[in-house]
Image (tube, rainbow, N blue to C red; front, top):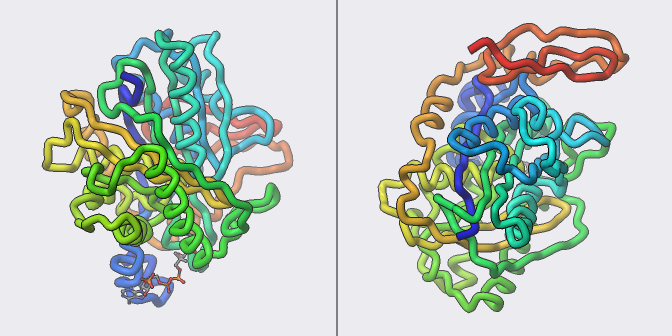
Length: 385
Ligand code: COA
């Protein structure tokens, strides 16, 4: 059975409460809490970056997995740290993955994690005895005082794909939509994204319709054939609107319970771009009170620019024994709240770009930290505990 054998995520140990942000920006907090559906937003300290987020989540996902079985490591990100070297090589080094593993970085905005999933499943067709480690890692940055500010966040989700899936087995039908649109992009010279926010929400919904229609044609499935749905989650309200739209289009019966458990984690992590769909899946499997075994999930991935995909998978019997619910609950619970000044200080931090040596002050990170930079080379180290 091809699919996800293990799934884990990690987010920064710091967050800002969106009520704090709303008060500072002179905004009614209900705009964030109700209008966007978000409560908290993870913020990375100076010594946490996409590599440490990725390596920590992958270390968690690899527990109980023989690392020698990993034949390929795919890292999806749109907050990459290098134009040439794949982010996954640092992760490969930090985790001691096999020397004969193929490592590559994938990019297509928030869609790249889904691309990693589909490419990994294809690889398993020809390498059924191998496993694929897919990591989606991102730090969402729109800028202080920008409309996108309350929809920032950061996290990495890692999953092991194999022919001995334990959590979700994927079906082969899918619906894809690609179109050249400028709704969100980040040129190489910019630290923050350029975004036409309202336009991006419109395209997201249009892409969903296109993808559903192709998926329906390929699979002959109806809305009612899916017990649950996981959407790309830039913010919770976006996914809720998407689900309402899909129910209408597909003439299905809308029920909030079809999506609500997938929102729980993202509501307090914020946007994690490529990782958000998989954090939504972890949230659904781990926080749902229902037994989801043998239930079909419909997935929708959207990456601005844009590429989108609708696909499906079925939850496997016995899945509960392979979840990391306690670990994830602890990660979210143990985070420290930041004041507005601390959040802005973290946001404004930049590593030197002139080749000078700089060592980061130690903040609270989990398994790894960014030690600093020397002659343009980022230096990483495991944390002591
Ligand atoms: N109480 C409750 N709801 C409120 C409110 C209040 N006091 N004030 C505003 N709202 C609602 C609005 O009615 C709106 O709901 P609607 O979408 O149903 O109309 C929602 O909150 C957002 O308000 P809006 O004025 O549209 O927000 P904005 O112009 O500041 O920006 C985004 C919203 C999403 C466009 C912006 O955060 C953004 O650009 N984000 C990044 C891009 C992104 O995430 N795109 C998603 C697709 S990938």
